[in-house]
Length: 312
Image (cartoon, one colour):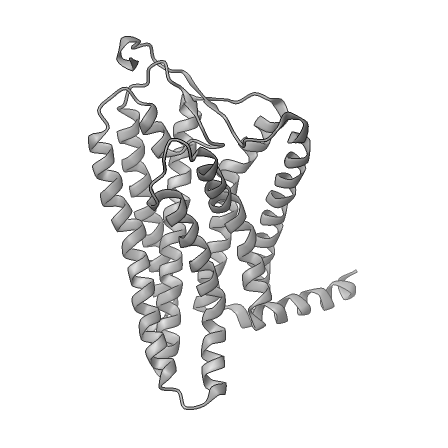
């Protein structure tokens, strides 16, 4: 049926959230508040790490880049969703849709690789504490972040170039609040078999392999912790990993729910909820997880607030 109409699509329609019209203002205020909290929370983490010399360590170096990634990640999808809710205009130009997909893929990949780098940092800190400073040098941390950017951009560029080769006919409605790659492939009237193969290979390389590395790192960490004779030592070791583990479970849990669990044609609302958890809630919760569960971050926050009256 789609092949009968070969007219090109100049724009797509984002259906957005399944919210009743009379409740859109409430949800607009809710998501605006969540977005602003995400921005302020992650900016505060970057500021604290920048100002407090005690946080100038590899773990917080990676955390500052994760916070910057979360800011960018939310800014790719949420402002457009808020604008659509406010103006009732659900359209997005073809070029804008492809661009949104590109940046969404970049920051998704960055999250994966940065969480993996943080897991490696915790592995070295707990399993090889005497060699920690010699292994986790500033140069290595910079290389890990640079490689994360290169791999993420290359992955996103590959998907985007393949997407640009596809034809889109009369079907242009995306049942989500952002331009998801999977949804776009379903709308195409071209052969997407190559895209599907690349998505599978890239999914293994950017999602499954980083997750495997994280699991292996924490397997070694767990084995090392079990050898610690004192309960105090075990608690100290766990406290250095608790925040990171919480973020890993939250992040990969939403990825599995959104991309790896098969969805039926009647589960679009469930997919949207998973998308909200992944693109909106996870970047919102990360600052709270690291500030509430981390003694160093709480100390830096108290120090900042105690200095504030003196500055005035």
